Length: 147
Image 1 (spheres, helix red, strand yellow):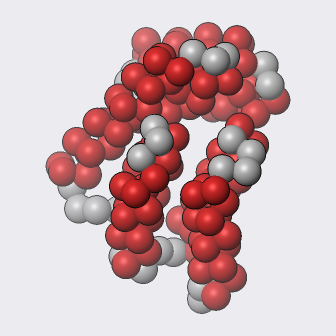
Image 2 (cartoon, helix red, strand yellow):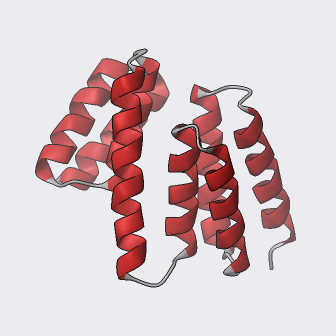
C-alpha cells in the first residue's frame, strides 16, 4: 500500500539511496497523494540537486496540509509537519510561527518526540541549517521539561 511504500522510501532516503527512494515516493503518490510523501519526495529532489522539483513538492505538501487544517481542528502533529514543510521550502518565518502555534496547543510528549525526530532527519540532509537547528534545540528543551 501507499503508506508502506512511502515508509520504505523514507528509509532509503536516510540511507542515501536517493534514486530508489524517489522511485518509491513516486509509486506511493500514484497510489495515494500524501503531504508527507510530497515532502519526502521534495527532500529526494533536493538531494539530487533538482531544486525546482523539490520546491514544487514542498509547495504541494504545504497546500495539502493547509487544506487538511482548514477542514478540521488544528492538531499539534499537523502543525509541526506544516512547519517543517515551510522550513524545507525556505519559509523560515512561517515555519517559526507554525511551530509556535503548535506549542500553544499543549503538545504531547509523543508529538514533541516526533517533531524532534523529523528535525533530526531534516538536519542530516541540511546540516547546520540555522533555523532547523534552533527549532530542534528548542523542541528538545520543551520535550525535556514536558510531563
